[in-house]
Amino acid sequence: MVLDCDPGHDDAMALLLAIADPAVELLGVTTVAGNQTVGKCTLNARRVLSLAGAPDIPVARGADRPLVRPLRIADDVHGVTGLDGPLFEHEPKVPEATITAHELLVGVLTKHDSPVTVVATGALTNIARLLSARPDVASRIDQIVWMGGSTERGNVTPYAEANCFVDPEAAGQVLRSGIPFTMCGLNVTHQALVTDDVLSAFARIGTPLAGICVEWMTFFASTYRRLWGFTAPPLHDPVAVARLIDPAIVRCVEANVVIETAGEWTAGATAVDLHHYTGRPANARVAVELDRPAYWTRILDAVAALG
Ligand code: BDR
Ligand code: CA
Image 1 (cartoon, protein in one colour):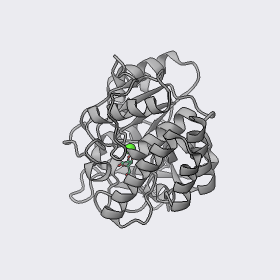
Image 2 (cartoon, rainbow, N blue to C red):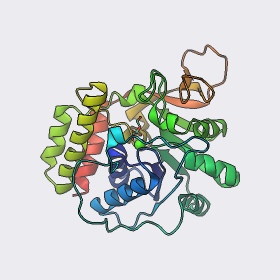
Image 3 (tube, helix red, strand yellow):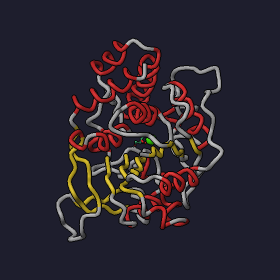
Image 4 (tube, rainbow, N blue to C red):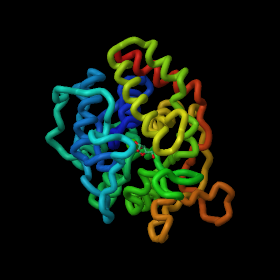
């Protein structure tokens, strides 16, 4: 798999899961503007790979803005660095790749014999750009598993989830491409709450990396408490990785999904036809239920395995 992300606290945890879980092989990391500028997200991805002791996984910088809209960052949620919490004095040892995200995706998809999944935990700008520039290569993507959207309400506007809101045109283009698509939206990621018992389990691992995870999730908890009144924050992005690792962890149903791009008040909304009102054919697998114990076991095991 390639992880296309905008770290981000929950993206950081998704990276750790993808690096350490034996069921997947992380071939590369591509970054996209979203939670913060693409420069900050790229630095954060390098930082996570350094902390995880994974210097050989390439980190390549992607789109610095959505296809047509101005960039809206989420510094209210993720802070001025995009990964606020623990302080890091030094530059990460893992360098930025000398190739772009586009070149990394083209390289991986053309050279790899076995099927390559793209797990996306940010706006879908990089994949939409690949579809426009190299449809021949994009069609080699085995499947896209995305954290984004919602079958219910949004988290940046009443109806839009952040990753979809940042670049709805890109999300629409990717959905229309016909590449097998799985949507892990807020309706399921809000089942992945970092409750006190989960935080304690991370603390009990006792490694420096686990301590940093606790600091990240504690920061994330503070913003979710302040902005939304949550008693525990939802760890969204690893849900998409977990779905690839073991589909039984994230139950999905087939449904038609379209992206609102023209609505005056609803841009970035995912219109998910769970009840088949429209007669439009299913074009996505939509996540509806999380096996919480299995989810947390997988993430805790990953962090523990990284030492
Ligand atoms: C999504 O938006 C970002 O803030 C998170 O990293 C996650 O990918 C949740 O709406
Ligand atoms: Ca993200």
